Image (cartoon, rainbow, N blue to C red; front, top):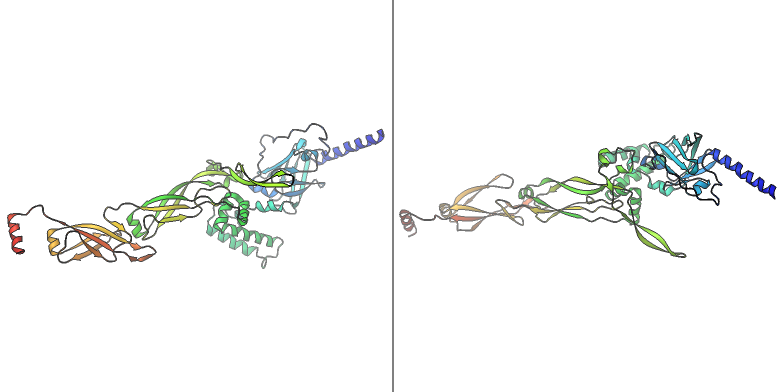
Length: 451
């Protein structure tokens, strides 16, 4: 019996030596002893998995041609060693390097040959003790997460702030390049499908804003009908009667919260873009909680947002169309405050006409008061006034004009909304300026005339 035990112990020690030489911790460490404290990242090594290196998430590799290891999306590193089975292994990737904190075996640093999960990708590097190590790509084991890591802008090869014209141009170019009818190379069909899907997202306003603020996961939630919508914001906008008559484009500025895409990747320059960014509001998610054997309930859980937000002074050009009325609204969809994974509400400008020094508006008609002397009121007169488009409008009144008589000029009012070629009318109230007194001679002449 002693001889048998000796053989087992010797065999265990022999295998442990082999595992340490292959890289990583021992497969037999930790048995019934005290649990080893999780190692910490060395100074100067970031624990971030940048957007550019996120393709590693959910991939499986052959380590030193001997064992399979996995890079989980949450930063957990999985390997058949006791350290990793005790959750003492984790990984990060940034600045073109892959860092593996492999339990008691320490830090492993490797450089991949390619920047995508495909056959032929090999990582070369060294362990903490200076011994070389390498890994070959095997497969993507977490396809769902790999789908969530896709970047629509990156697939089309455009900048994050590219406008619609640039996005459309890139799509047309790539869809022709990878179209299966013209390109028979391996992988062309997959690239064509990715280009098509990316454009479908960026060409749809709701999908685009969700992707910008919550990534592919938010877009997937939209398809399931699980996306919340933010509240609209109504802002008063004072405009002149001239603008409502002629039409105009007015600049307006709003301060709103926006989600910063650039902060999600510390490979990108942060400087002017991210210096003012802070935490986004806490997010609410649905989780399943077990309340008994085989019984689960859905509950809301408030979690800290992993996104970064900033206050942005956004300039909006508001188009005032001819004939618009005070109280009318102009809507800008998706321009209200942003929250990760939500469709923002609209910014709604409510028009308020400023008081005009001369004209008063009633519907599509305009009113103003003109003062004439007694002579003009009795004998008739010709006059003119400056309209809202700065042209001179001439008109003539014949015969006697009574005090507060109204003169109507057809077609000289406001343009009718949606029918700018049609106009309301102008109504001029004539106010007669009577003399304060008459001389004896004047009284005599008037008496003689009116006799």
